[in-house]
Amino acid sequence: MAPADRPAVRGVMPVEEGAGRAIGPRVWEVAALVHAVADTLAARFASVAVRGEVSGYTRAASGHCYFTLKDAEGTAALRCAMFRRAASLLDFAPEEGHLVELRGRLAVYEPRGELQFVVESMQRAGAGALYERFLRLKAQLEAEGLFDATRKRTIVRHPACIGVVTSLAAAALHDVLTALQRRAPQVRVIVYPSPVQGAEAPAALAAAIETAGRHGRADTLIVARGGGSLEDLWAFNEALVVRAVAASRIPVIAGIGHETDVSLVDFAADLRAPTPTAAAELAAMPREEALAVLHDLARRARRGVALRLDGQAQRLDRTALRLARPAQALAPHRERLALLSQRQRTAMHRHLERQQQRQAVLASRWMQAARQLRLRAVQRLDVLVARLGALDPQRVLSRGYAWLGDAEGRALTSVNQLQPGQTVKARLADGRIEAQVIGIEPDKPRR
Image 1 (tube, helix red, strand yellow):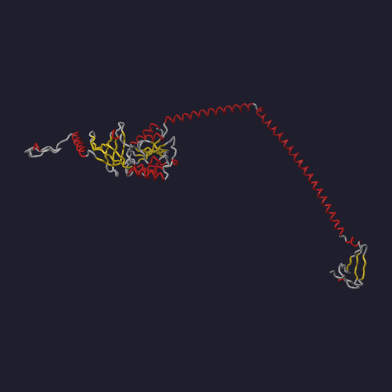
Image 2 (tube, rainbow, N blue to C red):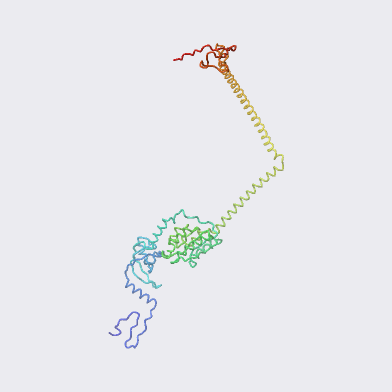
């Protein structure tokens, strides 16, 4: 084959016939090389399907959509572009972490020389491994009560000091400090630095939050970070950080990512802000508004003091007027004293009258009781006299009875005490006799 008929290898100049050495490799123009690569990709990957997780999804004002497609392990990524016509055919709203299947073609974005996948159709294949992990963690921490609304504390309205937990190199720190300087320059700011991305970020964030609470200098704590993909914000989804926020001794405002970004720290914080700048605005009242409140309070205080002083001055004038005329000031007291004296005399007279009436009643009752007692005593005495008279031995003797006794004066009550010839003494109604027993005749026993 003649040299002119040999096919040329792209990127290498053909060797001339008879040449003793090869000519060096072809030097490409940048546009030509990028265009050649694009042609190769278009020919090799004209229609392909790929599966991965959506990350950093945005929709431009033109209607075109841009995002990154990552594998489940996060070890590879592919920039994707879906133009307005294809985006209008979507039947769902792609979100961070969604697992999707794309159909389209590989191409090179020539102005930047970047590889991209031009999406012609998108179908949802699942929620994505990272997003599913996010949902599992959310359910677990919610079951523990870390997201309960009853745990939320009120943010201090007029803080003297605000703590900020974020990276010293983060744009979020600049946004927070700028907003606070503009809005409330009188508020002191303490930064508790911590990485906000990477394997060491969760432990460092939790330690910074705990340190801020232990110091107790800040009235409010802002946990901030700029926007990013679900992977970029994952440190704020770790249970260690979420529990640290929930256990913070200081009320926490979460300003993580952009307005559409959601992390588990947002649910555990006492207040969620859509951006770090918004977190700074929610943490402190504007200086002008605070000054207006202070001016209003000062005006009210001056007015209250003036009214109080005016009232006290009037009271002082009335007191001075009374002191200028002592007799007039003492007149009401004299009248009151006379009234009290009259009431005292009246009360004493009434008391004495009641006591006299009570004594009269008691005396009447005593006399009546004495009469009744004397009457009962007389009646009882009469009864006793009658009983005593009935038992008088003299009266018995006057009825024909006699009292017998032996020589020693002992009473004889039975014939068994006597013997014939015994001398006995007898007591009659009108005198005494001595007699001798002639005979004894006992009574026959009764049946």
